Image (cartoon, rainbow, N blue to C red; front, side, top):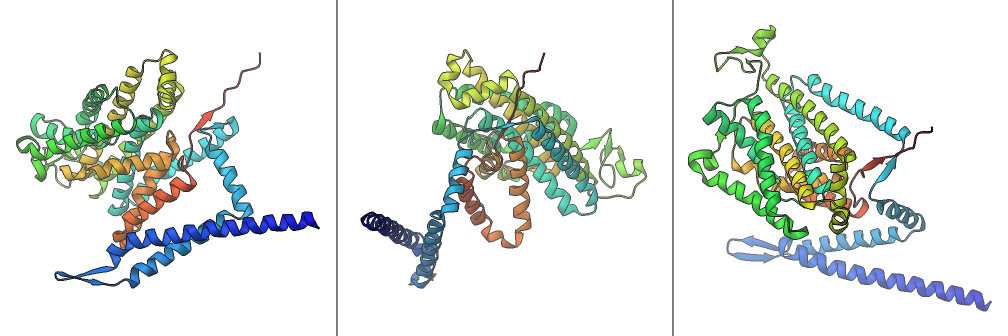
Length: 435
């Protein structure tokens, strides 16, 4: 009986201790929520006076406290604790091994998803809104793949990736304005210019790491934006400048040919459809994205990709293995910048107009969120996150005032439940063939 009494006493003491922790946490949650919501919702401006209304912040703080209590109580249940421990064990692994069977399954799923992505715009060929939304989502897929090289594979925190995006867009507009370049010429040359700027940026930040690297790249992105804004004689400043529409073998996608050529619909004998330009851009961009996916996947398996991941994990160990970190960093910055330049050309041609307001820090943050939420180093995760973060705000346009709030809540939940992103990178298994 004494042993049972001791067990019950220990259990009761544990329960009392847990309740004390919960009540203490509830008290601090209530105080912090009151501090946050008090000035925002508790003070109403009326002319030059403030009218206090403390009922709303108290209600909001009570809701937050109740939600916190329910959340902590749920975490202490046995089955949820076991599931959380198993999830933490899986999340501790940076990557999972993909067996040949899983590889075949992923290949079938990826092929089906690619087929749907290719056919979907043709189904909605008369719906301009759907085609433009899909085209914009595909542009962000391309941007996410480029930044995934720098951040996901090489581990270099780049907050100025939007600068290369702007370089590609303005190269098309400036090339058409001053040098007579078209869509295809810009598509071939803009990656080279963006790669040169990426190499210049990479060379200047060779000795910076972590937060310092993020600050320098953030400054680089702001410098590019300010140059585009203030160089009125070249870029048009805040007014921007027009960008040419794409052509195909000299055929234009307008109702009437503007440059002495033949409209595409007249050459094909079709009725004019204003969405034909966006459909053509989507098809070209789709194959560019497919090429980029294949290219990045193969790079990961090559010595260059292994060097990127070695640099991400430990630069000192990378040096000890005889890998030159200078070459590795420069290659990552340049290849990521090339992809950003390509995406900029498609964006400028899609919009038909470019100005500096399209290339703010928020764009860099959005692209970085795509990489982080999708999974650092995960190609499939980046594609899924790009479509979710691009199309979901369009579907929730009626709640436009709360989109940033929903975006922040999504980020917080992802960092709690899936800190390595939606889909972790998967490595192919290597087997020794039997002799």
